[in-house]
Length: 420
Image 1 (cartoon, rainbow, N blue to C red):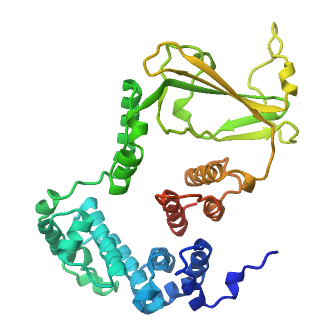
Image 2 (image 1 turned 90 degrees about the vertical axis):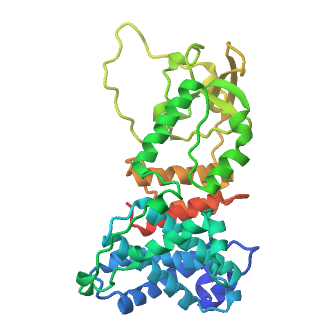
Image 3 (image 1 turned 90 degrees about the horizontal axis):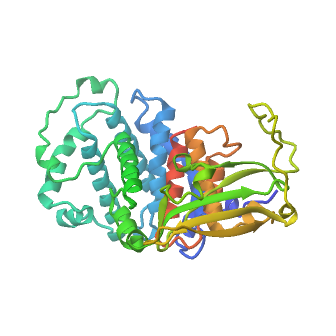
């Protein structure tokens, strides 16, 4: 058993480590989060004991506040961490209570907008050490000042909820005209609409041999229209098909993760009349397979059909002794071509530990495991949120635009909400 040196440090020493931008801060943050859960319990007992909500429910909300405190705390502002964390924890719990107790009909986009403004306001306060002016805040959230002023007027509706269950019975019911705010902010689609729209866009892109993107944030726009623009506009290959053949001498069984709506019949691989996807400049395609080694004692599901009477199973060729585990076949057409070309890439049967794989493969594996956990997949094995976090943290690589850090935060939120 390997001792964790962080466990021997005081809480203040851990906070001091957060100022070291050169080191790996994730283990430090994890340790602070573990020790900081007592702050959440204290806040609940002292401020929300009579709220009428279950402690576990309030704890999940408070944990988000603790995470925000750990990731945004700045020692240079001279503020005590506990005081800073308590304020954020209380804020998250208040938000949760107010979201659950409906005193007025407020559209989701309005709540999301108000939430984004509060987050931006806190971020500007952390960076500058002072509250932002109306114009500074309006610029940061990309809303005109008069629109932001309307949001502030409506905040009273969102915030006026007594935290005591008994006092809440006498809370006033507000009526508010939100038409002015409605016209000053694009509405975010509900999740179910986003899923349907993404599916429709995918089908349109398939039919039109194009690409699609779903832009709902500045970061997403930057990713699609700046960093990935060449891959969207410059097509280097069309009707790209990929086929993987496994060597039975090394692989007993396999399963492709995902791509359920991208499967082709094996006969379609050589059929140039069958439409397939496009690849742009700089694009990469990742496919993960789960395999069962040939020498494994695991039994495969038995075929559901009888053995053939007039045919024998396909016999192995001499290539099975080549030391190759599989061959990847890629068929594609030039952007203006009509006849496909074939490329083949054999892959040797080189076995190594998971942590010896490159960072991109390890990170992709953590994303796939996270997806299976969320779906409750029967194939997730012993994967859990802690393992996903550990795998992702060890494979951040050169995360220039913090996309992988954003994934880590998403996994932590899912874990704190208790998704199983």
